[in-house]
Image (cartoon, rainbow, N blue to C red):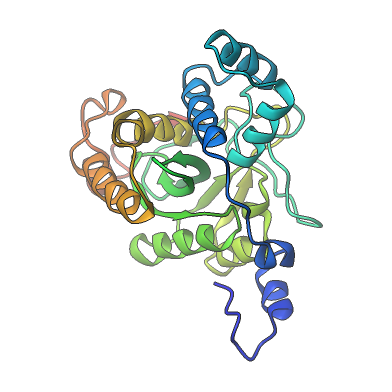
Length: 278
């Protein structure tokens, strides 16, 4: 999204998009192969035991014969963008000077498509390296409306996914996210404000608010990513495109009486509410 050769300065482009220039200029150092193996195993353990923090993960890795300390596990978890799932005062670090929006889903019955969307980021291991995935999910139907992958956790690829979802499916009533810097950035909130969308953010002691998209990450990783070990970003992109097509059109959901997300999204109306409690 940042054009280094544009007439508009990089500083001004970052100001308009609500981005920190550090992330634009920074060139990441290559990650050691042994750390990549550790990150993949940490990701697998996080899926199995999402309540494990760095201390427990380090002990589990030690039991598996891996020489790694708690501080190094903490560093890798931060790089991966994951943390233990437990009640805590804050779920994510917002952008500097960002506006934090109230949580709007408390007690709400989510009854129809495009009533509430959710979005989040996750870490995706590859055979050599890793990428980050953002997805836009319709909560009522579980349909994946759009997705993007990136090698950094800057807001730009999240905003691209959001714009694509709105262009293709229309604006929802509410979008709910955590308080991560991608979702508190001006670039993200400006798109929602312009579309007339109400912004909802997980608040204190609301660690389970994004449970539906967390379930999506488990499905993506167990059913595709960890089985295939994609070689590079191009293969990963193609694989995710295939998987989300399967997920939307052919993967049945027990909670939806064995219907697919597309069947729910394109056929449900106000006379037949889904009544998903937030």
